[in-house]
Amino acid sequence: MQVVSSPAPAADQRGNISDPATSDCPPASGTRHGNQNRETGPLRDAAAVPPERAHARLVGIARLAASSPPAETRRKSAEKPEYFVLPVKSILNRCDSKRVPFEWTINPYRGCEFACKYCYARYTHEYMELDGSEFEKKIYVKKDAAPLLAWDVAHKYSYESEGSGGARPDHIAIGTATDPYQPAEREYGVTRACLEELAKKEGLSVSIITKSNQIVRDIDVLQRIAERSNLGIDITITTLRAGLTRLLEPRAPRPDLRLAAVKQLHEAGLPVGVSASPLIPGITDRDGDLEAVAAAAKEAGAQWFFSGVLFLMPSSAKQFLPFVREKFPRLAKQYEEWYARNGYAPEEYRKKASQRVARIREKFGYAARPWVEAKGKSPCSQMALSWDAGSVAHELE
Image 1: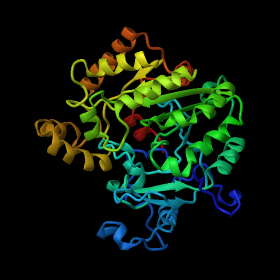
Image 2: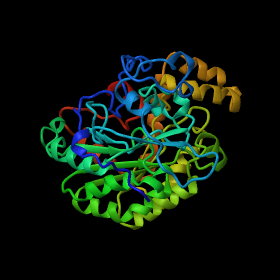
Image 3: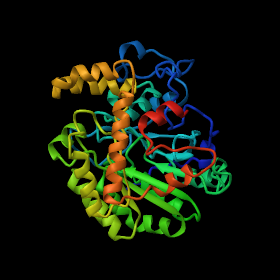
């Protein structure tokens, strides 16, 4: 496993926390992703972008991405994505919103090989003037992650969160716009490097979310973090049906492997729960399906369970709606009515889904996620049953 680094001093790459071009937090709903990087700057290879963007001038993260060198890889498969080394100014990125239970995000990579059909984070490639369809084809490995994170925590992080009136530390969420344990992690180790830095600190509040059983590789460092800080681990399992999983999440590990990871993490004494997000209307919401995920998760040792209804940003809808028309034609009309002009499912459906999740949690005796509960009790915020991609994408910049 190689850790991507540069001989240049890390201090040269530190940026302002408000730099929107390097932020991993989703944009406000009014952001036009396709235009924000067009100014005087280098041209991107015409073959890498749609024709209308082939001669656009690039700045910010798009400029960095366009000049990013290939990352060395041992993988020989013709189906492997392209890997690039991305120089960044910061690893810890600020998210200011009362609707989500975290103040900071860490996303070790840009792009994700799991290729989930519904993934809302495809918009992050548009910041680099790439089409959302390339999210799983071009993976950017963030350089100098460990020294940058060490500096970020020392200079940005607060142990007395402003939103809580100083009652709790800021919360750091790892994996909000990429999967930190996608196959790239086996080679480049950026997630592991970040965790090693966090393990050196005391009194942090950290959570990590993944679809991969590869997380068990890092049980040792996760235990060290849990000894000194508040830690929560979320494993995403949207359905127990392996065939459906392969359709929706083509390159992610099977559901049984994820459940085995939950069991192993629990047996290692680590706090772990299961996310069944997104709940996909007409596809993963059959009677008994969500309940089956919750039951299996409980048996494996999950301490909490949550789920939010599918949210589709334009870049995601462009991939997901044609997929529905091809694989679930009977649902095509419903999806066009629900999502063609609005990223959210109807309010009535979302309300019923929220009530269903509440019943499931009560039935199986699931606790609330500790960091969500802590923020929910803050006088400055009111948290819903769970946060979902829609809340993040529309509230954060």
